Amino acid sequence: MPQGKIKLSFRIVISKNSVTKWEKLIWESTYKEFLMQSQLFSDRENPAQSFKQLLSQNEKASQLHFLVSTAAHPYVMQWKGLIYFLADNLGNNFLPFEQYRFDIIDSNIYDKQSHEIGITFTSPLLTLVDIWEGHYLVSLDENADPVNTGAETLMFKMQPRLSVSFFKP
Image 1 (tube, rainbow, N blue to C red):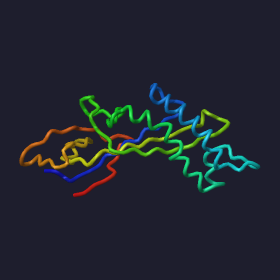
Image 2: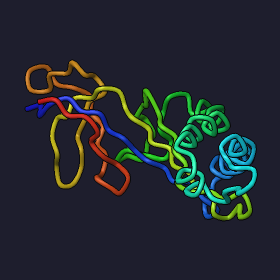
Image 3: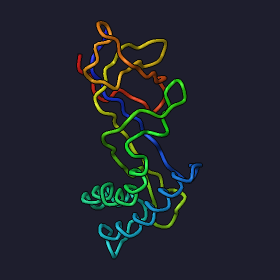
Image 4: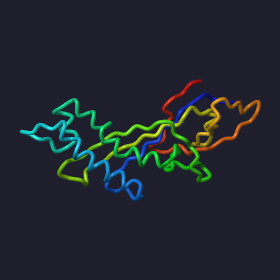
């Protein structure tokens, strides 16, 4: 019996330790963008070195999340709406995302190695069929009625950085 409608969110953290070419390109691009955009919010007489210092000196520096995200956007669009870092139980990457949120975890204008960002992808509305042995059993069809008509399903293991971000019984 369907337990409700959900949205799943999956977060990717990109840092100096990231290994895929896609992640490395985003890391490089967003760091360069951070260096340029952070100048808008830094005090010329007492410049902030880190993102956290910028935030404490100038509350408008929170705009950097959006401003720096423009450097990541073309790379995210390459995924054509699918979360490629989240495979289902069969190893396929079919979970679509309808939106993403970019955030700067930390960065430093003098220490590139401290640059770290997060991207959180959120799925469209899914039918939660069941939670079974540590797995979400979902249907991409938000109007699915698996009890009466059956439904095609996907199964995703509960794991770090995967969360139910919306639930409606």
